[in-house]
Amino acid sequence: MWQFFADYPWFTLFIVIAAGSLLGMVRFGPVKLGPAGVLFAGLLLGALDPDIGPAVPAGLSVLGLALYVYTVGLEAGPAFFRELRPQLAVMTGAVAALVVTALVVGLLGSKVFDLDGPYLAGGFAGIGTTTPGLAAAQASSPDPAQPATGYAIGYPLAVVLTILFVSAVAAARTWPGRRDPGSGLPRELITRTVDVTRPLRWADVPGATDGRLLASAHRPLGGTPRVARDLDTLAPGDQVVLVGGPEAVAAGIAALGAQASTHLLDRRDIVDYRRILLTNPDLAGHTVAELDLGDRYGAKATRVRRGDQDLLAHDDLLLQLDDRVRVAMPRERTAEVTGFLGDTEAKVSEVSAVSMGLGLAAGFLIGIPKLTVGSTVLSLGTAAGPLVMAMVLGRLRRTGPLVWVLPTRANLTLRQIGLLIFLACVGLTSGYAFRREAFSLFGLRLLTVLVIGAVISYALMVLVARFLGQSRPRTMGLLAGYVGNPAITAYANSRVSDSRVNTGYATLFALAILVKIVCIQLIVGL
Image (cartoon, rainbow, N blue to C red):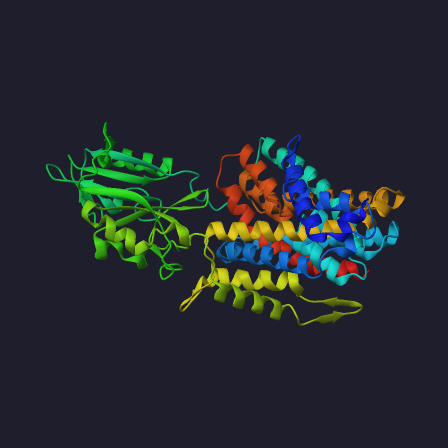
């Protein structure tokens, strides 16, 4: 009966993706498996017959993994390099915590519980929920099913324990956060019209010179509305439209006068505004200032919508394809501004085959060199090679005519497809071995090691963050990035309304993956 799935592997692959995705939507208390549901569906089906796993098309998992890590690197690269200097101490502490965890799992598992290195490496990847780490463990192991068994045991354990740790941090009453570098970006942007009641230079308005507050439109006393391009001194009787976070806008209103009863931009016959989709590839990777909208069209960008996040369009903000740029402009120039930025929906999902092909080829190339340390062979491989290269290219954004970054929607789509394919392949090829090993005394011993390792690892990360004076919201984000699971980030955001959760996640996510891959290859050699 089960031979059908071995005879028709493409059908099997996609039925696992469908069933696993449904499983990933099921909520178990505060936990949802998400894409990992595909892994467990594959394990379940692969366990039914030993012929199912070998029938999976060769090399397909490598393709899926490459798409996943490359798109992750393109997105994570800019945040990693931006946070490198201000968060160096936190990054160093996270690396130390990961190394200690690897030593605990490796030595405790091999010396005390007599477990093989590949199982321990997969388990270490599991409690770190790092899919590229699983791939590195499989590439370094004589039997790829062994790391997959450890990963499948460690993954759900990691999600549950990390959420418990995040809950404990969120419930902590005293958490000074004495060295936290501010609250970061506001979680939301608002627009308010102000009646100016006292003369004040725009440069003296709180937030006007440090990128926290923008003015989009201005109407002088007795005059007509205009785009607020070069504000100097605001006089009593003027009206000005402020854009920024709630706190910055409130401070601006207090400094200038009072909130107006009507919104200046409700009248759009002179100054118009709209969100315009950035699809012109020549503009990707340039800053808002480099668009030169003021001199070109008498216009001004005020906000940038990127994915689910609203960003204030300060001069130094780097733009990428698929951004929605909110522009205030003279009504008669609307068509020109729209044409300049692109605003072509059909291009949102377009991917440059040249830049993506070159980027992936370079990533595989730097993954080839090997370093032998004792009996262990270290390399970036097909997991870390494309990831490292994508982080660098994501930081560069463009090189001459080549735009390295992908439109947000295209990036997320390719990432999801790659991850689902990889997890389905791993589950199917490892299912029979998982059935044989996981539900036994051996599986219990491995689970014991992973519980100990996970508790030590997450506790160390929280202690490092607190010792270094990080705030409670940022600590929650750092822990989510340290473990590397977006479901934990979503849970942290549901407990605390603070942008430091997301910036903390971005600080450690890519770095943690790279360190875990190195540690995993060392554990395999035990």
